[in-house]
Picture 1 (cartoon, helix red, strand yellow):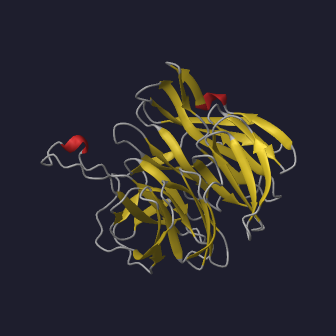
Picture 2 (cartoon, helix red, strand yellow):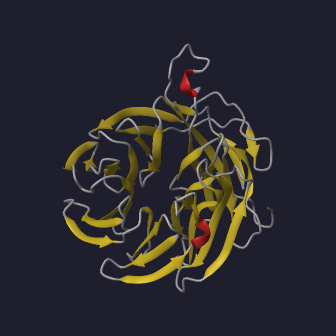
Length: 358
């Protein structure tokens, strides 16, 4: 798969936690650590130099593909949970437990105490009728997507970090200790053990199922995280565990990168059957990767320091990778100033190989 940088990165002055496209692909949304929901219009971009996977990384193009739009205000905590539905509907959750439903960029429902703390993720059911949310206390809640009336709850008990819906309306959720559950909203259907994504080190819980994605054919569940070797200043290789979604059998464990590669923080399936993800590690490591289940190793080569989130355009021809740029913490070299982290957004065009070529 060939990757082309499409214009210069769009830099957000305040750090973002997550990005997602609208279903028609015209708008990109980003949840901010300043409590806002940023928006960009996706423009027809001018292609620049190509950066082929396995090469020396991204070129330095000169034109942006994203045009900023007014941001949405209403949160006081970090917005790290977003779900975008049809007909102009957007849902955002923050670290204080607030859940807001937006319609045509205006708040229509606002629940300040939707959760008793950090909303980790949001997911919208395939039919658009149900919104799922999860929190650091191990609670998964279901909401009517139109009214935000709570319709159900699962008390899991361990920090739930990831959500993903299946086409049949069942929900996968993954926790800090590497346990994945498939639930139909009324009862638990199956458990999947991703124990390799969890480590107890120095009385610290390390790792966890950081992201989940079900393949387009519904047969393969991918779970991303880290194969940690130590707690504290967490270090480890990136890991993706693949499961047979129907039986729960672990079919492949993909471990890649050095001990500083860090976490796989976001993954999405391309319609071509390729898993695309971003990694983030310490200090300042990370990259974009592509993997076809069954292959011994992923295709890498595009370095994106501290990749935290990823959004694939609905047409599958481009993606946006969200990274973090640290501007010199602790005031060093900046006259005792303490600049905030910024978030460069990299727009990348995707070109699938022709049949018979890699």
